[in-house]
Image (cartoon, rainbow, N blue to C red):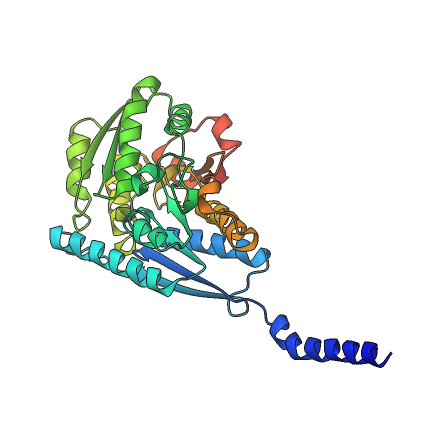
Length: 338
């Protein structure tokens, strides 16, 4: 009997000693890397955090996040500046690899494309968000991120997007698209050019440097017969406090032609916006992150997620200013611009 009592007492004592350690909750560490500070990236990041919070991960409690936003010299925008940002991305990737966090998040294509190998090579799971074309960020396919990588993409089926444009503007024949060297912008234009003929449209394009103003390119395309402009998913439009968007809007207002956007975010002057919602896509990335942290899933076992249905937004005030009457089938499903 004495032996039993002593045994139970020892167990209680060990339990008492161990309990403080057992009560300590694991603190997960996440490193976040992005290039350029733009509103759309912040919206995606907020959507990502909302999903983590809803699944029990609270910053400052059981979650520690270190976020690095690399500045890009948009005023320079030359070869040396591009090499400089590439060096910064790879330098940060090396730092993340050494830090050994539980998870790394990359926002946008450049950060994902140029940081992925160093991060995953260190055995750190990587989740990306706000990438338009996964293949442009080094992924094998639209749904496969490759070893150590998964994420959520802004990808939209260009056929569906152009079908919406054709429905909204039945007589539109020639559209203009202007991009920088941004991988997302280039990919959008390539996809639009490839699919536009099936909808009786032609896409004329012009590539500019991130440091260039938009008006010379817009005027050149207008002289070639452009009847409307479509803004692609390109950081060129989000930098410098949306100066390029404002300039394009002013030019189109003077010429009484519409601006359309393949970015689902209220773009000043855009009559019609079609695309994936940054908040939704950020949340999809958060879903994959939760599975990695909570369930121990391998990133490569999780498919890249995307928003299934494109969202539509119309600016009725701009429609009235341009004398545009949009079909009711578009107006019934579109969200009004705020």
